[in-house]
Image 1: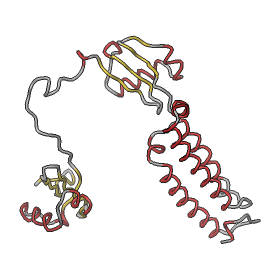
Image 2: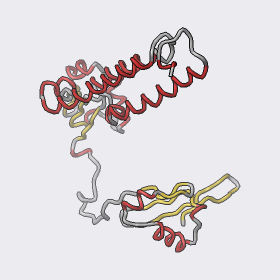
Image 3: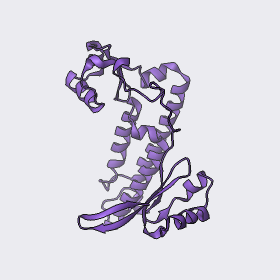
Image 4: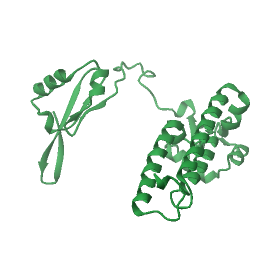
Length: 244
């Protein structure tokens, strides 16, 4: 465990051990921070990410620095982060500090330059965000907000919104989420259990479709327990998936 402490020099194996431990330690740290801090950075998340990256980078590249001290500091910062996040749920002052209210960028087709200046974004960037949401004209926008996480939320005027089946009184089937059940011959045990099914039920479905599970590239399952199976076949243009 000498590689944990500061050394005059480290062997190749000791450098590798430092990298391995630092890698898995950062994975555990990221898991402790929570999925939100990874998928969408808030102000506090951004500060923590900068600090943690700097703390762990130095001992992984400088043999004169101990790894143990950086890990202790990281743990302390993670605890402070979790405590601050919890307190922000209790105190409105911290909540507004770390998660400020959204800024209005467009209101009923008109640009709000004050909101753009506060968000520190240009008109070109705003139009880029509108194009990503397939909005070509700001006059169609009832409200556009700059969210604390850096995303632009866009709401169209009622006359420009897509007509739904409800608007036209058209009967529709209930929503059903299709999930991958088998991928490359391996089935998802957890998904089967969630649907109240077992391996015997799945094998019976494969027998009905006359398909060997080992040859299944993809099989999906929806909320109505309907199974769709795709197998691979050779063609002149390459491999194709066949639906059973």
